[in-house]
Image (cartoon, rainbow, N blue to C red; front, side, top):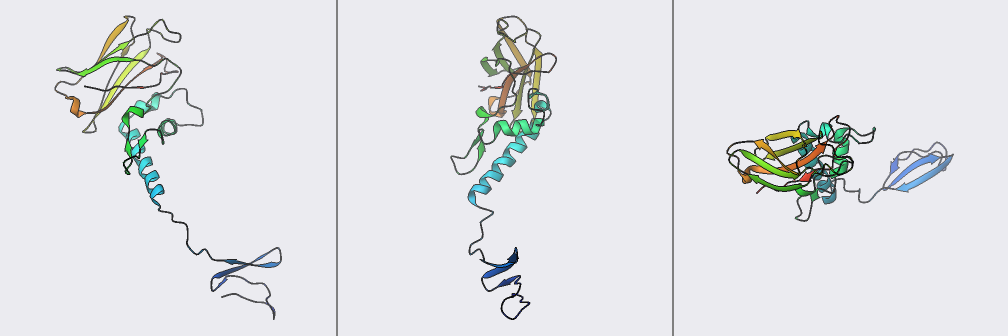
Length: 209
């Protein structure tokens, strides 16, 4: 109920019926209560929260890979912030009504080095093999760069290999994993880092067949 301090209205506080009364700059102010409060659990908000959780889970599944793969990020960003900014909402597909990760759009590294282009990728008896062009004649590219290949299995296992870029026009990089099949590879990415770790390339999604 409202409270009056003089015979007519006085200073009014609290609420009465569908009204809320307050005093602002010596005057009584009467406001109507919100008839239908804003829904804080709308479908759009549920989709946003689900998308955020998907990307957080993916970041965690990559272990320490993304701790080093965003060396050119702004100083105000942590590796987590840089990863989330690069992938939300761009790497989330909501077309089916339920958000899912589009692995081909996920960015796991970023920098100003030229992208490492995967010429071919396949699963064989020894593991996952990817052929890539070294491109050592390009600016900012050095044969001492580290080329990193990593994959996440459907069982949640993170597997990785890294090697010096080299100077041969075309080189293979192998993740040793005897017996693995293409169906067991959830996603796979390739990128390069400068030997001192101060720069990287944007990641390349590798489709393993």
